[in-house]
Every structure is written in structure tokens, then in C-alpha cells.
Amino acid sequence: MENNKILEINNLSVEFLSDGSVVRAVNGVSFSLKKGETLGIVGESGSGKSVTLNTILRLTESPSAVMRGEILYNGRDIFRMRKSELFKIRGKEITMIFQEPMTSLNPVLKIGGQIAETIYLHEHVGKEEANNRVLELLKQVELPNAGKRMDDYPHQLSGGMRQRVMIAMALACKPQILLADEPTTALDVTIQAQILALLRKLKREYDMSMILVTHDMGVIAEIAERVIVFYGGCVAEDAPTLELFNNPLHPYTRKLFGCIPRIDTQPNRLSVIEGNVPDPARLPEGCLFHPRCDRAAGRCRKEVPPLSEISPGHFAACHFSVH
Amino acid sequence: MGRYIARRLLIAIPTVIGVFLAVYFIIRLIPGDPAAIMLGAKATDEQIEMFRRQQGLDEPLSVQLGIALRNFMTGDLGVSIVSKRPVMALILERLPRTVELALWGIGLASVTGVILGVTAAVFRGRWPDYLITGASTLGMSLPSFYIALMLLTLFAVQLRWIPVIAVEGPGVSRFKTLFAPVLTMVIGNSALTLRTTRSSILEIMRENFIKTARAKGLDEWAVLFRHALKDAAIPIITVIGYNLAGCFGGAIIIETVFSRPGIGLLLIDAVNARDYAVVQGTSAFISIALIAVNLLTDAVYGLVDPRIRVEAAGG
Ligand SMILES: Nc1ncnc2c1ncn2[C@@H]1O[C@H](COP(=O)(O)OP(=O)(O)OP(=O)(O)O)[C@@H](O)[C@H]1O
Ligand code: SF4
Ligand SMILES: [Mg+2]
Image (cartoon, rainbow over all chains, first blue to last red; front, side, top):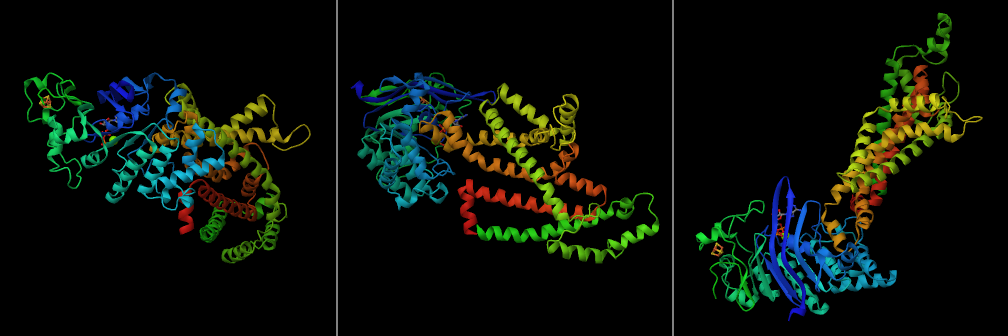
């Protein structure tokens, strides 16, 4: 059972030191990704989803960032890898597509060249073969007029097309894991559905594992086999998708569902829950959710609830979660 | 692009005429009659009167202006009253020296500026950054005549490496005539290029596409040179164009201090001698050169920034 975990994150925390205050963006997150699995991560804005995903590839590294914990990729801690090893994993074994398709491509380079760059970097191929591969990739991501588009610059493409290019780039070296950080949030609704369908298709064809971050419970229901609910840089709940939808245990998850009457209706965005998202520079004591929780008791204000397995495979971090 | 350039050229015509008119009146506002200056203090009134008639200086200003403007439009810049040679010939004779100074000066200033700017950005917040930005503040705040005088004192007077008058001759190689004037230009012009390079690279390194480049597996050097520097090229080229346009003014000062007979010195000598035709012709020539440099900068933009290329083709 243990061996099929391709990625295992243990007690990850990420803090940013900015203007004398400490921004605690991620606070002791643990979860794992199985080989071939699609894992969904949901949570409100600012709950640390992007920081967590970026940290898997050490993209948050900077003089002002403090990172703790372990990120085991096939059993090896990414934090302990030398730069040269890390550079071989980035873009080849673990790849990422970002939340902002409009600004994620270099505006002064042709898109074909930007994809080819990844191929040249990780494989010894000639120019012709690289070009053929780029064309093939652009066809796979269903970019209209792929042959002509290779020589286009990013500004000649719409947001949806740019995200397709990003996906092509991420797939270029047949990765083991695809990290998708809200790949559709910035796009039109119709395009969103197309991109999601594409990701689902490609994930199967490429036999990858995938982590998909989203605001959208509807997207989770459609794609993810398991869901992790983020709150204030912590895992509030972690369960198989169907189980989570049928039997949400954490009061926060329940509130999230309070906004979606039924799973099979129009997918809604997480609508606003009363109260504010916790400020990562001034996190409350005890359970991070207590200022907004209807069930909060005295204990909640002092003790941090641990993430515990309430029923097999279903984890929640609440003092009062019982099956 | 062709239509765009044509439009720019059309706009340039009134600009050049405007410069011509401004110079025409300003030079005549400077006290001092060319005839009196030419003929010296001992000249009689009669001699002066005759000289004025010969040179057409006795005609009403409007008539003089009309003739000058008509000649200018047909490419005739007139004749120097000092050397009696056509102004165009004087300019063409002096031009290579100024072009040589400008190209070496701005070329080396740009290379130095970009290299130091990249270095400062890479070592941001550490001592090489402080050293480089500190030195650039000094380079920017020192006026170029002061830099030129200091270098002249050091290299020509103290060390005697270079001649006081920057003209080639026996024992004076071209390098020796160029060295100090070019260095003056490098000190004065690299600072802005350096700062622009540093700040654009730091800004671009925060962009999302830099994160994409890192996520591909590129190392920091590849991210810097294959991505960030290409994007920084646009602001850097703007500054280089600006420096190149400004260096004509700088050349006047530098050529004067180093007694280097280029266009700048030609202009200054002509002003002192009230050699109207030469002042007029040289300044018009410099303004045309400025416009040409600006056009060139715009054309180069299109080469490095694909977004501009499309707009220009569309409009
Ligand atoms: N480099 C940084 N320096 C300081 N604070 C940061 C940095 N990056 C992220 N943060 C902060 O960390 C917190 C978590 O940000 P993150 O981007 O992970 O949120 P998110 O869950 O992805 O939200 P969204 O849904 O809006 O994308 C935010 O409060 C953010 O302001
Ligand atoms: S621990 Fe307390 S405050 Fe936190 S979610 Fe559970 S009931 Fe609410
Ligand atoms: Mg995010």
C-alpha cells in the first residue's frame, strides 16, 4: 500500500517574512498522492493552496521564505535534493500549470520555441524531432491551427489557447505528476469546461498522477477521486470525493456545501461563508476555524484539533467530528 | 511598418524647419557683428560696410531669412565666412570623428551598463550591488565637462599618455586621440543603462513567466539570460537610443575640452566667430541626426518586441 504513494507531504509549513511580520501561509500540511490518482484541493482564497503546490517544486524558495517538513517524491525528500537533481525533476517528472494563463508565457518568445525549450532541456533531440513533438503536443491539446500557431507569440492567443499551450508544455516530457493550480479560474465558463475535459482526457492518456487546485466544488465532483479541504494553510478534511460529498465531517466543509444544494446541479463557485478568511499574518489560537464556527466550544479556542482518521480513509481536523 | 516610417518622416520636416528658425534667431540675438569679429578691431567702418554688402548682411532680416530658408530646403547650407568653404564640406570632413566618438562611446557605455546592471541585479542587496549602484550615482551626478576636464588633467597633463589636442599625428595613434573622450562618454552614459538594466531585470524576475521558466527545470543563469534579459531588452534599448540621441550634445562638450575637431567643435568655433552659415548648417545637421536616431530606436523596438511589430503593421 505504502509503495504506491508517488508523493507524500509530511508536516509542511511555509512562512514568509515580510515587513517585520511573519505570514504563515502553510501550517503543517500532510497529505499524499497515489500513483495514477487525481487529487483535488479546495479552499477559499488565501488558504495556501498555491503556496503548497509551488513549494512541491521549490518554486517558493526565496531569502524571505522559511520552509519546513518533508516532500517525498518516490521516497526522496525534494527539500534535500541538490539543485542539479531538482532541475531534472522540474519540467520532466513533475510539471505545473498555473492560475494565470495570460502572464505565464514569455511575451517575447514564440510559443513553439517555449515548448521546445523544455524538450531540449531534458532530452537529447534534434531540431526536427523537437519541432515534430511540439506540433504533436499542440494537436493533442487541441489548439486550433496548431501548425501555424507554433510561430505565434503569446499575445496573439486567447487565454484559453494560452492555457492549452501551458498544458502542452507541461506534458512535453511525459511527466509522472501534473500539478494544476486553478487552471480554469481565469477563463470563460465554456472554455473552462473544455480545458477540464482536456485535462481529464490527457491525464488518462499520459497515465499521470494529478493534483488539481480549484475553488469550484463542481469541478472536484467531476474530476477528483479524493479531496483535500484547505483552511488557513491547514488540512481541514481529507476524504474520497463521494464520501466527502455524502458525509462531510468538518463544519467548514459543511458550510462550503451549504452553498451547493445538490451535486448534480450547475457547479457553483464556493460562495461566501460568513466571516473572514483568517489573516495568515495573525492566525487565531486553537482551531483556526473557531471565529466562524457555529459549533465552537471553549476547547476550540485553546486546542488545535489534530487531523485524525474518523473512518477508514476519511480524515478531519475537528474536536467534535464523529462518524 | 513602411507607412509608419513615412509618417514619422513627414512629421520630421516641420521639426527640422523649426530648429532652423530657432537657431536663426537665437544666433542673431548673441551680441557681436560677424563683420566686426571677422575683420578685427582695426577694421574701418568702410571695410565693415563693404564686407556686410558682400555677405548680404545689409539686407532686411526677412529677406536674409527667406534666402537662407530657400537654400536650406534645396540642400545648400551656404559658405563659411571664416574659411570660405561650403558648410556641407566642413560638416562631412568633421563628421567621421564625431561618429567615431559617438559609436565607441555609446557602444562601450551600453555594454558596460548592461554587464554591470545584470551583475547588480544578480547580487541584489549585497556588496557588489551597492558598489555598482553607488558608482552609478556618482557617474550620473558628475557633469560631463567635469569628467572630461578631470580625465584631461590626469591623462594628458599628469601622465602624459595622451595629447592635449586630440588630433592624430606622429607618435599620436588614433587610440590615443579616442581613449579619453570615449571614457568620458562611458562614465557619463553607462549609469542610466546600468540602472535601467538592473531595475527591469529585478521587475521581470517577479513575473509569472519567470516562474514558468523555472518550473521547466532551467537553472538561474538560463532563466536570466534566455528569458529575463530578452524581456528587459525593450527598456534597455529605449535608454540606449536616448543616450545616443543625447550624445550629440555631449560631443560638443567633449570635443571642446579635448580639442577634438569633430562636428561639436565645429559648431562651438562657429558660434564664437559668429559664422552664421556654419552654426545654422551644423545645428540643422545635428537635429536631423537626432531624428534619425529616434527612428532607428523605434525600428529596433519592433525587432525585439513582437507586440509592437503587430501594432505597427496594423496601424
Ligand atoms: N511570496 C509571498 N510573500 C508573502 N506572502 C505570500 C507570498 N505568497 C503567498 N503569500 C500569502 O500566503 C497566503 C496564501 O496564498 P496562496 O496564494 O497560497 O492562496 P490560494 O489558496 O492559492 O488563494 P487563491 O485561491 O486566491 O489562489 C496569502 O495570504 C498570500 O498573501
Ligand atoms: S474544532 Fe471547534 S471550532 Fe474548530 S471546526 Fe471543530 S467545532 Fe468548529
Ligand atoms: Mg492560488
